Image (cartoon, rainbow, N blue to C red; front, side):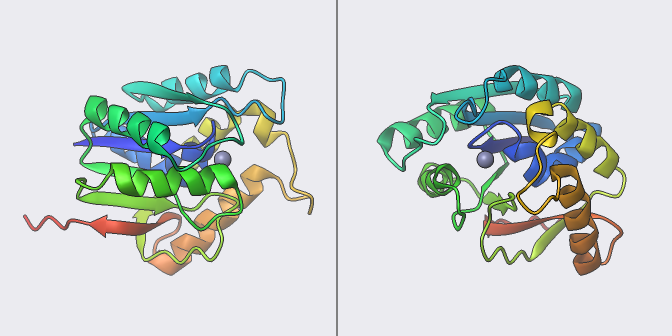
Length: 204
Ligand SMILES: [Zn+2]
């Protein structure tokens, strides 16, 4: 199976579905990453290098860059066309992407453009990023064996994990808390959570 994970910025994918992608790679599925901006708006750090390090550690088959300017993503033809190009290269059975209801304009723009671009994809799932709003998942993956690996992927994004939210909470702490909460909801120890745009079930 081929999986394409899309993110507006470096680290969105790892935060939202890094544990799931590690499980997929361990099970010999092909994982492709599509990152739309270089995340350069708030830092001088080379976040492309951080993202490429995380992709290599994950075992991703390839990483595609949208080349759009951080904080300037818009739902428009250029973004939709860029996503369509990534879909063509990855030929995915499943697409993971930021959720549309989100405080960050780039996440909103990517999610709504992906809804259009993925109109022929049978499995499209929104993930929980740290600025998601009213995220009410109903689909989960067990990340009991990959949560530690997920934290290592995020640690590749040094410029981000060294930051703290205004409340004092740091990113890795929030990742572990969410994994425990979603694990509780999913009846496993640790989980990642998704809201499908649609999910084509396979009965085998
Ligand atoms: Zn982001």
